[in-house]
Structures are given as structure tokens and as C-alpha cells.
Length: 488
Ligand code: ADP
Ligand code: MG
Ligand code: ZN
Image: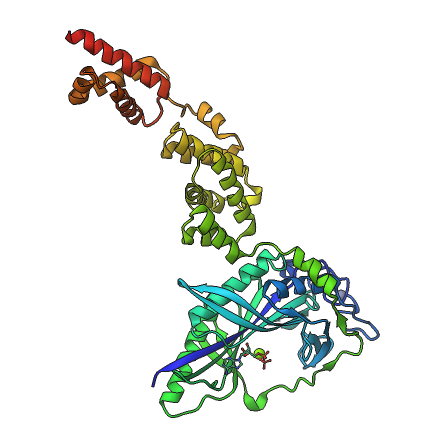
């Protein structure tokens, strides 16, 4: 029997606001590095009598994500209490949105190895994060710095059919959230976490099989490996005459193994009900419209534009698009380059080659780089348009530019990489070229004067482009004429 996998993802992304979801405590990108329990207050510690207040900026960013994902933002949504007991959850319930989420019915377009698919998005809602437990030899400690940090949960339709599709969707979604400025995309710090729902069914079947859910996947690799393992596990069960049962699974990333967290009979009853402390959230059409007007161009559209307008190779565009600062830098360098004859693809090659290499050796990233896009373009003009330097020199010059922040012209000058202007040197080259090209010399002397350009080209080649073209032309002419008087 041939089986088809069906996958739906729930994605939790931290929303990068200044303060927490329901209180004024600060949100920092790296709560793990703070002294524990320093960014806390009566609200996020759930002290009696404390009242939550909805963070307007978190809602605005949620709407931003909803619009980028083509969802319908709901005029009214409701925060609910999801009750369960766990030591990292001070209130004994999590505030989330349940029956009435912030947004519904969207989609994300994804490219999976040259193929395009549209993954439906069921709903997007806002909720709060929990604290974090630290298990040590002397017991378990809890840190509430993260408790109450806003999260966006994005639930997909069961529209993915393979681990690759799930991974591509997750990566595309990460890119969008980073572009929108609501998440740093830093997977190592847990800024985005995935839960995968997996089922299988006979190929061609129109009904859904029983699903299992894999919790807490923290990397793209973990996501695709875990889904892959779960598909194989379910196929083995069906092939041996068994039945898949509802389960919540975990993934041991180090051992690359699934383990059972809960079976159906241990399922939680969350007892959802509207939080009486928080009025329904009303979002006006005017607010939605003003947020829609501020949406940036999204990664997939930007990539397509580069391919169409700049003639860029798809793979290079894919490398340059995801980091918005890098993409902006590239675009600026292309604009300066186009003004002086540098091809966008050459800019892309230098970005993904030398610039990436030089950035890797530094921690400052492209925004802290001492080379402006304009100066990168100027360097490439010297290389490709003016033929004033060769590739090896250009690499050296760029490295120095990164070190010192000098202009390419200045580095060329200082390191003596400029064109050769020493007449003795050029004369030696011209003598050699004329000696080695008897056929062309004869043709020239026979009256084929335009051949002078060919001799100039040879001199330029011999000097690896370092000769000054005007001077090369003059020397070629003088030497060829000398040859004429020698012969007649
Ligand atoms: P729950 O809270 O029970 O996990 P959600 O509605 O939050 O329910 O999430 C359900 C997720 O599971 C969605 O991403 C949905 O696409 C996916 N899903 C539902 N049914 C199946 C199925 N039979 N196979 C695979 N994924 C499924
Ligand atoms: Mg779920
Ligand atoms: Zn607080």
C-alpha cells in the first residue's frame, strides 16, 4: 500500500515588543542571560488582585503578521483562560485566544525545490509565554523572566505532504516574521518553536487519518527529522495491521528519537473560558488599514523582483533575501552599480562570496561593516568596467576596505595596485608583444590600421589590466611605426 503523509504545523513565535503581553515588564531578546526573576511584577507573577492589560503593540504586530499572511483580521477577538497546572505557569492558567482568535483564513506561498505550493493558515492568535524551569542536582528552580512575554501562534491547515514541505513552510514563515520586524528569527534562543501534527492515509484518499502531535521542535532540522521519523513509524504500524492512536510525542534531538509524552487517555481538559479580567479586543478597520499601508515588501516577492529585474540567479537571490539588512545593502550596491555599468549578478557574486566570507570573520554584521554599498559598487566598477584592477587585487582591496574603511581608490593607490604607468615597463611589454605577433604586425603595416586596438588589448592582458589604456595605445603606435621605418 502506498501512503501519503499529511502534516499541519503550529508555530509559536515570540513577538518583539518593548513590554510583556499584559504588564509593563520589559521584553529582552535574550531572557536566558538575565539574572533570574528580575523582569517580573505582580501581574506576570500572578499575585492576588493584579490585573492584566493588553499590550497594544503586540496586537499591532499580530495584525501585521495576519495581513502579511493574507488572513482576515477579526473585528472582535477574545482572550481566554487555558487551565493547566505546571510550575512554570504562575496563574495556573495561560491567557490565550481560543474560540475567537485575532485572525483567520490566510495562506503562505512557499517554494519547495522549484515547486510552488500554497499552505493554508487556519488561524493566528496572541498568547503569553510561560516561565522556564532549570533542573539541577539540588532541585528544580523556576525563572519567570519569560512568563508573560507575547507569543503569536500561527496554525496551518493540514496542507503539507512531506517533511521537506513542512521545513520549507517553516523557513518561509520565519523569513516573513523576521521581515515584519516582530521576531529575531534566532532559533537557538527559542524565538520560534514548532509543533507538528502528522497523519498518513492511503494515496488518493480524501479523508484524514488519525494524527499525532510532536511538541517542542526547536530547529528546522529537528522538525523535518521528527516528521520523517513519525511518518515511518505510522507506516510501520499500518503495515503490520495496527492502528495509529492519538498521541503527544516529544523529539530527542540528540538521539534523533521520538518518545511518547501523553496518550489519548491522559489528554488535558483545559477548561477554556473567556478571561473575565480582559474585555473583548476590538480592532477597527482604520487600524487595520493603517497597518496594511506600512507592510514592507516580503521576502518571496523581493526575490522574484530581483530575478525578474536584475536577472539574478534564483539561488543567489535566495541567499541574499532573508536578512533584511543584507538585502537592503545588496539592493543599494546594485543601484550604485547600475549607475556605472556594474552588473547586478556581479554584485551578488561578490556579496555571497567575498562579503559573506569577510562578515563571517567579524561579529558586527553588515550594518556594522566599514564598507558602504556605494564603495562596494565603486570597487566592482574598477574591476569590471574600467579593467583597472584584476580579481586578485580586488579581493585584497576589499579586505583592506573592511579593515580600514578606506575607499577602493585610496587602497589601490596606497598598495600600488594601480595601473602601470612606468614607460620603461610598458615599453618592454610592447617590444615583447610585437616580437611575438609577426602576423598581426605584417597586417598592420599592410594598412590594416584598426589592428592597433588588438595590440593595446595584448598589452593590457600582459600587464593584467594594470596598464593605462591611453598610454598603452600611444606606445603601441610608436613601436609599430618604428617597426615600419626599420623595414623600409
Ligand atoms: P490542537 O490544539 O488540538 O492541537 P489545533 O487546531 O491547535 O488543535 O491544531 C491542529 C493542527 O493539526 C493544525 O495545524 C491542523 O492543520 C493539524 N491537523 C489536524 N488534523 C490533522 C490530521 N489528520 N493530520 C495532520 N494534521 C492535522
Ligand atoms: Mg496542537
Ligand atoms: Zn510583569
